[in-house]
Image 1 (cartoon, rainbow, N blue to C red):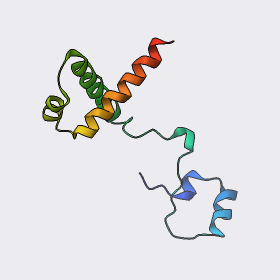
Image 2 (image 1 turned 90 degrees about the vertical axis):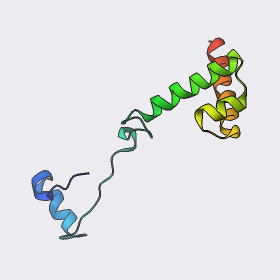
Image 3 (image 1 turned 30 degrees about the vertical axis):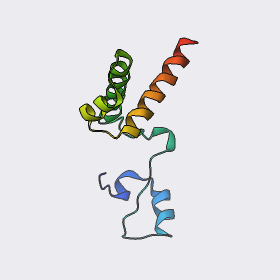
Image 4 (image 1 turned 180 degrees about the vertical axis):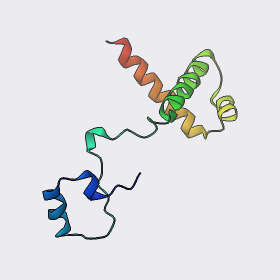
Length: 97
């Protein structure tokens, strides 16, 4: 997040209106809700986790036991079971389309 001087980026009328409320202090102006990226989208983490979860599901369907997946991916048994369940639901949803 970069600092910008209001007099360089705001119309004069808007700057004068803002000065009625705040002067000489920093103010954060958030992005519009529709322009905010979801968690992990900008740095690729979301995609990496999706690929990992698909791999976990694929290996489970190939016959690996949950405990083997726990050891391989360093996740809890509960997390592995949730991933398998979610991926199975997604796969079933896509099969009906």
